[in-house]
Each structure stands twice: as C-alpha cells, then as structure tokens.
Length: 81
Ligand SMILES: [Zn+2]
Image (cartoon, rainbow, N blue to C red; front, side):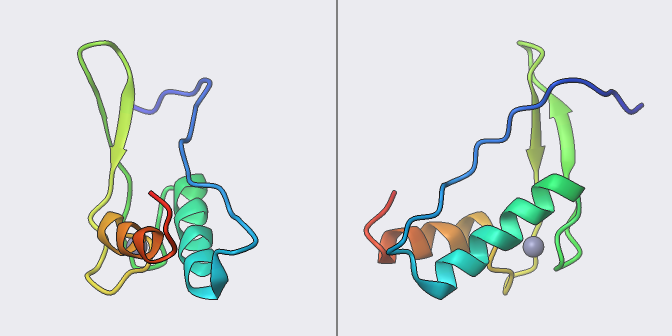
C-alpha cells in the first residue's frame, strides 16, 4: 500500500568546511531519500511505528558513501556529529 502525505526528512546540512568527500556523501544521501533508491541499489524500507510515524531504513552496499556508517565516519572526521 502506498500512502501520500506530508513528509519530514532529517538530513545533515552542508557547511562550507565539509570538503568534497562529505559533500558528495550527503548529496548521494539526499538523492536517495528524495527518490527512494540509492545509487548503490538500496531501496527505502518504510515501516510505521506505534505512534504512527513512518521510518525508512536502508541496506546500503558496504562501499556506499550514503550509508549510516560512512556518513558517521565522515561527520566525525570533520568534527561534526
Ligand atoms: Zn547507498
């Protein structure tokens, strides 16, 4: 079943000091969230929690810059959390 309605994406913002690697990773992540498919092939797995909120989880390829692990590492390298 596909439902349409308002959506809220929580994504890290870009900063001038981010550098090309983090900027690229965030761009890949943003695009994946907007179209529902990452360029690594991962698709959004959307589930609803007990409060009625929908959450998307992704199973990115190990070398995908948009994975949670890759982004966390890049954010930490740049001093962001
Ligand atoms: Zn990916």
